[in-house]
Length: 435
Image (cartoon, rainbow, N blue to C red; front, side, top):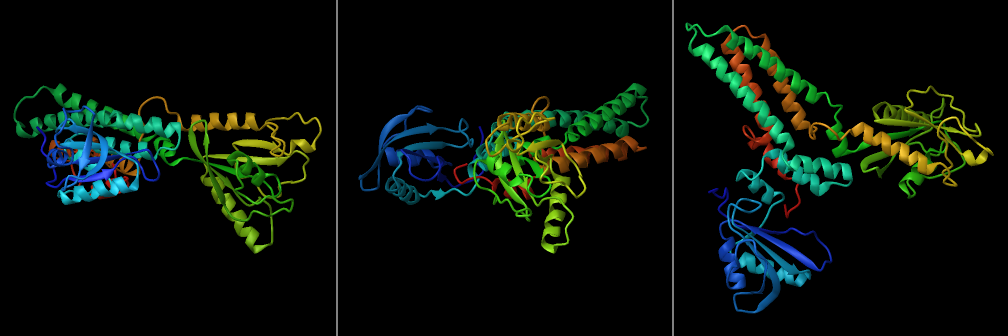
């Protein structure tokens, strides 16, 4: 049976803030059962929702609520836990919370429920991060990726690599401990082959174009072009709100403007910028400089040309993943080539959004193996690859074994098997209080 990592019992709202019909109050820790007895008179059968009157120390009724009892280890945290489904009024929540404090409980810190679940072995660090990502998910792609991580796909992959490293270490220990024994030569040969396979697999996993981070953080699509080509009108049309000032005067936009949108289930930040042209105006020149930097770092660049050729590009064209014709309403019978739109009339916008959504889906490529989602995962795996390369080149089994141990520790830091104390606070600080 799992033991609670903490001696105290905590509580927090797990259903969000604001006006609502119901409030879910979560309790976890060794005093959960006794607290439920004091509040509701008697605890129900495990994992069965029952209606109970909740009362204070004088017997006054605080609320009539659904209560659930989760004895350890069969709870989210692995500890004895309780859920109280209260009526949503603030007065009810305040009265019940005051009673919990009287009974010796304390409000939970951010991420403390999930931290306890990790420390009690209910999930690894990757799954814990999946919980945080699922709570923060804005798009379908982010939700799917978080669910895959919460299901343990990445953890299973990394634990498999760790198990293979342990086997390699055992082979090296045999070579160290029995140097005078005539061990079959195929033992060392098989170890070299397995080491090479592991190295190649982890390198391939790292060479993913950062698609996991792209899903989690969102893609960046830059809208570029000469002044007055319709960049600000386009970003307003796609975002469906006034992000940028639209004016017939060239050079209105001089700084970087951003809008977060959902394209085919993928989070995308659209970036509007200064028009690209040669200029002697110091402020506009700085805007053009920033625009070129944004183009260079973007995941996808949409370069605009006005159909009536009223906005020629006099600066150099750094990059264009899509050349889009705008203001097609000004040219009667416009037929191409390529995609064309009129953000004013809406002509061509549906085709453009469908195309951009397809490009966003291609860039994240959610099929295949689970993707890295955080910089700390990537840093640990890069360290593991470096150690495996050193082990591959080591002349002596003693040196090879040490590098394999360091590679194993690097992978273990991702799932939380070893060396995690210094990163726990930074991970769980990102959580909301009720998680």
